[in-house]
Image (cartoon, rainbow, N blue to C red):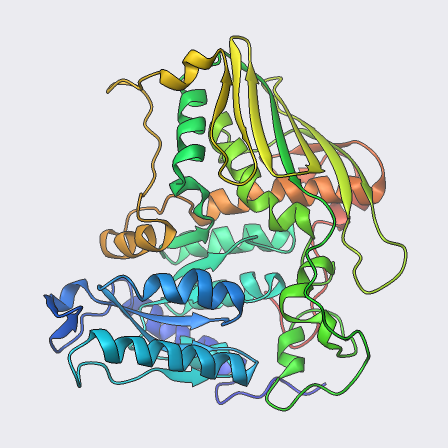
Amino acid sequence: MSKPSTSVSRRSFIKRASALAAAASAPLVLPSRVLGLGKETPPSEQITLGVIGTGDHGVNRNIKRFLTEPDNRILAVCDVDRSRRLGAKSLIEERYAETLRKGSYKGCRDYNDFRDVLARKDIDAVMVATPDHWHVIISVMAAKAGKDVMCEKPLSLTVKEGRILADAIKKHGRVFQTATENRSVPEYHRMAELVRNGRIGKVKEVHVFLPSGYSIQEASMETQDPPDGFDYDMWLGQAPEAPYCPARCHWNFRWILDYSGGMLTDWGAHLIDIAQWGLDTEHTGPIEADGRGVFPKEGLYNAATRFIIEYLYANGATLTVTSKEPGLRFIGTDGWIGNEGWRGPLQAEPRSILDEVIGPDETHLYTCEGGEQRNFLDCVKSRDLCYAPAEVGHRTITIAHIGHISMQLGRRLKWNPDKEEFIGDPPANWMLSRPMREPWAL
């Protein structure tokens, strides 16, 4: 198989990226005056961005949000689907034409290959909003190139990939944000903070409820040639060779195990994260996983449609993840707190828990009312940790991954969260990583 088309080979890219990394430890300072929304913005406050992945989340949850922040400029977009990246490019240039002083913005370049974005010296940071199987490779290469990274959830496709990413971010001293907005949602922040401050007593049980089934966008399952302007081989990347059909790509990749993990990883990346936050286990995880799931036996989509996974933590607390409708509940020795639905209003027993005031000397959990994009930009400037750094995002999705492995094997597994391996179980440990299709590797 030929290498994906690019003007920057992988070998030359790594060589150039290593040289750039040392000089790129701080955001680029633009040499000229840049105006935002008709007001002066000091050059030192400007952060230049490249957006890699311009599908639904790339545009609607990221590009549109970054465009509202006056202290960044999107200089590049990348997508293997030409129509999508050109649409994103037009959106960006039209918005800046409306809000910036004429001539202050030099335009947005579009690319098919993400390595061309990472090779640009004038880009400080990248937003990775590709299908899940691409998250780690791009983020690691971005870190090596000296770029700060915000990456969509779920952070990784396997536990081993996630560990490589978290270690690379630390090694290269990059700012990293896992794109999960829940930590800036008042209901989830308040819930976790009350739990962390003992308002329900000692936590005994946590219940995470995720959607069941699939949310499929209608598309043909007929095998055919990829459309003009869609680099399907690059879309596949490290994933196994497979015939193209429209139903495989874009939104629907979420339900195919070669590229994602279904609702367990898609929604689990949000709500399992809040469970970890409330339990104060962000840098560790459970010690056992026992999962049961229903996997389709035929057809293109093969992620679990229904599941229940029970986890045990070293302190005796249990976490149960169930396919149902979105929801979250912490149960303690002195009561419970939770909600139903996405961002649903808080409920508690006793009801008085909701009126509790967190004192100045108690635990105040790190959040950002402006959301994950605002938090990321602030941290690129300050060099502080974001509210969902790589290690935290990795630990969250590891819980989904080990539960998925338990479902596939059909048995309870013992997990060592320090070594990130199953105890005395070679078949399960083999499933902590996956082979990558050449020429891609970590």
